[in-house]
Length: 399
Ligand code: PMP
Image 1 (cartoon, rainbow, N blue to C red):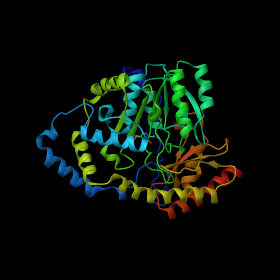
Image 2: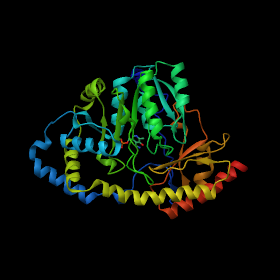
Image 3: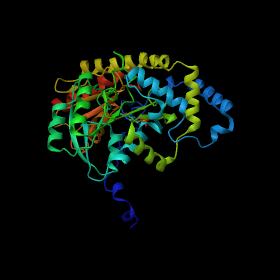
Image 4: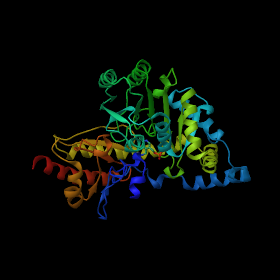
């Protein structure tokens, strides 16, 4: 059997955490709270078209040549300044690596660090794409719950005491996917202290950090890093366009060298043309003004979602109150399975979709959570969708 020839890491009996996430729904009345896509009508398409032209005219044939493994130096320098300003991280272009989305950065870190059965701590629920990347390296997971102000550090420390071999902790500290939760500054500092004391690496994944609707971005966990143990990852997918497939990481010393070793083996270097175009775009446009326009829209959509949850959902249901990002997390009573509810009742009766939460847990053992994304619908649609979903949920909870 050909299947027997596959590596164990792609075990065909276990589906990728990323597969089957989005419910099939051909109902034209359906309102989708499922996919975490940014709004296409806000993409700066014309400006990017001009930027591609500028990049080609200014660089000529050299643009189409192999260049440097870490990626376009001018763009890296701009990103280093950006994370300095917003994240209070002191770094330079030499420590920045451009990647194919934040997703590749996560995968490169996993590849550089994880042997089979190595111990990894993740907050739960967590980003499915990270689980999909880690899964390929067959780690042993330790799940640490989230609190309203981020990772439960007491539980993390208990876990570290019992499992001192944990080598990596993955966290999304800003407007977390899938819960919208943000880690407090105090916890960021304490987390780095724990990493120093218990000798593990922190993978700080922060693609949503610019999209705060209430306050300015908090200092990155990386800003408290004194020993080069934090790898910071971010992306232009949510603040510019995901089709650019441009993410980036910041790392130091031996970790940076290890990541560059796997990067060279994976793809030598990334899309020079795209990165030169982004650099030209940033030379002639104010990215922060663009982000402000995104925030003005998403802020209203976020508020509509939270208002809808408050107005239409029964008291037995709890939900987060995000002040940035794309997502809200809803917890149903333990006996309600969010996946079954979606296919049996929500899609046919309420004409609404969401992502059932099971795949956001490494052991896929929690069934009563669901993720709502508010970026794809107008505030009016969000209100209508929450009203419809709330009615179905009330029925399921109260019978
Ligand atoms: N990390 C998180 C938390 C995400 O939500 C996403 C995208 N949904 C990514 C990483 C990867 O995105 P991209 O590869 O487009 O940068």
